[in-house]
Length: 230
Image 1 (tube, helix red, strand yellow):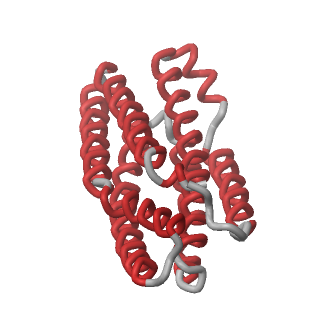
Image 2: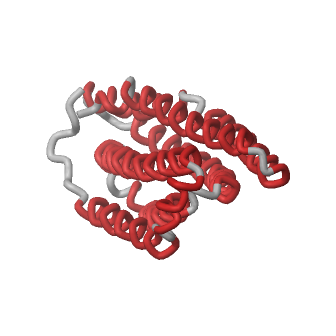
């Protein structure tokens, strides 16, 4: 399905995500003690491997989020009336820089799973509220667009956007992820009070699987809907 002809290039989003990436690196470098990784290799190779894997996964998650969000915002600008969508731009600035700080902190504390998982649970709460806000906004804009006069291709694109945002169980997905992150918190607390390594290893495995499976699901939703536009 081709994109709307004559679409604008929103360089401001590219600049924002580039700045956010720099903030993530800066936050990580300030909070991270790099010598602890060399100590972890000798002291606890399993802990080192799992924490390094989680740090790389967190960075990859941020990159994927930036790419997907950039794509989605451009679609909203292209198809849901440019005089309406820019009203959410102040929130976009706040969310982008907030995410940069959060992911920078997550990467820095990947070796402390109890802190990492606790931050994820808090992030899930904000994500739940944010997804509800986005769904409500998109629903309103889609209704307005579908009432108007649209060409066949443009109408199909708007319907595809509506399907992605309104038909998929986005909120249940976030709640499920939050539940799994709570399991990680519980396992982390069990390790904190008992000192038994299997609890910490289990916590890392649960959080890593949660991130991977959650991203596979959302990528599948995008691939079968909005990624077909353009």
